[in-house]
Every structure is written in C-alpha cells, then in structure tokens.
Length: 201
Length: 161
Figure: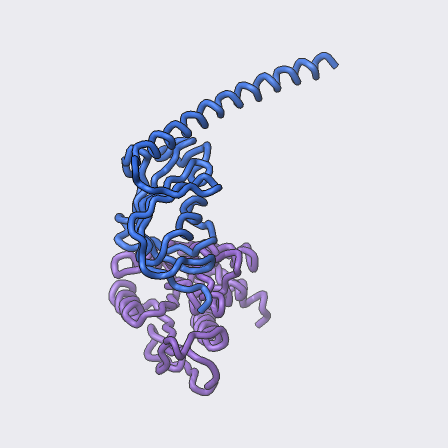
C-alpha cells in the first residue's frame, strides 16, 4: 500500500488527544504528518520555557495556550487537517462531549489520577472506543524497557510502566518522543484495520 | 490639481479634528489618574518612566521574578473608582503567566510583576497605553481608561530549570 492510499484512508478518521504536553504535542504532530483527518485536542495549560526540552513548541510560543500553539504548528505541517482545539480542563463531565465522534482516544496526561479518570470515563461513557495510554517515559537510555501492551480491544499501554518523572528523573525529548510516537503508531495500526464509515462522515 | 488641494485641505481638517478628540480623551484619562493619586494622600507610590504607578501593599519574602519565569498570581482589576470588572476568582485558581511573554497579560501588568517579590502584593495603576489602549476592550473597559490592578504574587517557577 502506497503512502497516498494510507493517507487517504486515515483522512476519514477523527482522533482525540487528551493533553497537549510532551506526549500529546508529539503524538498530534505524528498523526498530522500521517494524514489523520480530524484531530481533537484538549488542554488548559500554557507553554512554559521548561516545556521546550520535550514538547512540540517553539520559543516564540512561550506563554501561549498549548492548544492554540499546537493548532498553528499542525497547520504549518499539514493545513488540510482539521484541528479542534479546546482550552478546557478535562473531567468526567466534558470528556464524552469534547471527544464525541472520535474513533480512538490518546491519553496524554502527566498525572496518574487524570490518566485513571480518562480511562474510566471513556470505558463507562464511550464504550468500544479504544484508549491508547502512555505510562513511564521519564529519564534517558534503557531503550529495552519501553514496551507496548494490549490489555484488550479498548486499552493499549505504551511506555516502561515503571518510571515516574521527578527532580532527579526529568522527562526528556527522546523517551517522551518514543512513547508519543508509539501511541501514534498504535492509533494508525487500529485505524488501518478499521473500515471507513462513509455514512457518518 | 485643484482637486488634490481640496482633498488635501479636507484631509488635514479631518486629521486635526481627530487629534483634538484624542487630546480631549487623553486629558480625561490624565484627570482620572491625577485624582486617584491625590486620593492616596500619604500612601507611598513609585512612578516608573513608562507611566506605571506601583503601590506596595505587602513586601513579600522571596525574590523578584525575571523574564521567562512562570508565575502564579491572584489579581483583581478595577477602575479608578474601585469598581471591579475582572479577577481570577471565577477560575478558582491563581493566574499562570510566563513573565515577559506578553501573552494574555497587559503590558503594564507584565512590567508591574517584575517589581513584586514572591509572596508580596502590590496595587498597580496602568494608564491605558499600558493596558487596554484607546480602543478599550469589548464593552467592558472603555478606551483611554486607567486600570487598577491588585496583585498577589503567589509563587515563581524558574524558567531555567
């Protein structure tokens, strides 16, 4: 299958990304380059200088809302992609509405409570929609430890599942990027097996 | 040729009229600022070259923030008669801002934050040139309006981590 055919197939899908930090921004860019038709991103935070060591933003965007900055960056890569960016804090009440119609949801939060909240909410309110979670990406080295695990048809986990970011173990571009791209890769794998539902699009 | 001259004269007339209008509003703004400063009485304030007035309320204990730092502050924005029109209260969380970025903060507020230590609070008086300008903002703040900002600088996260 040629890339043009892959891109054409992917253009019919909508992917939700919860969080636009290290995982979310890099994953969104990988999906945009692959030609996903619609990307829904939600994040309430702004770009800080300390984010630039791993997140897909530029110095001129420091201080801006991540959603706005990411939308701009994606438009520069592929203007044909529809980006729906919501500068809102995600919770159990707004997740089903914001991510309505998404074929896959990428979990890209930094805190464990938020990760659990998202997975539980999607499981309860949006049954059947796969969630690709990231877990364990801090530090450097240890390529071998980063793995992929399919729990069932609706939950996939990327990362080493052990490390937690902290003062002595900062999250850094290479490992964050590996996990984010692994999540994007999983999204594409799932969508390539899926038939486009032309009636609904 | 005569036509050009005619239009030229007309243009100069219009420009001079708008100039008068602006002066009128600038004078109005200056009056509001002067009245507010007079009402302070003996309260100490500092006037910076930009036109920003800073009245220290609490000195604070930490260090001054520098450009690139992420700072968390609480604020109340009011007119010079203390009628409040905005604050961080509805969001129930301090306002997060990268100092020097001038994104989602007015010029005068950005400058004023440089003069507040961590934990301290100040009241800033920004002329419209450092806040919402001659156009104002929507129907909330009219043009040529000085604004009072009461700011408490909660914490600073260094930009150079």
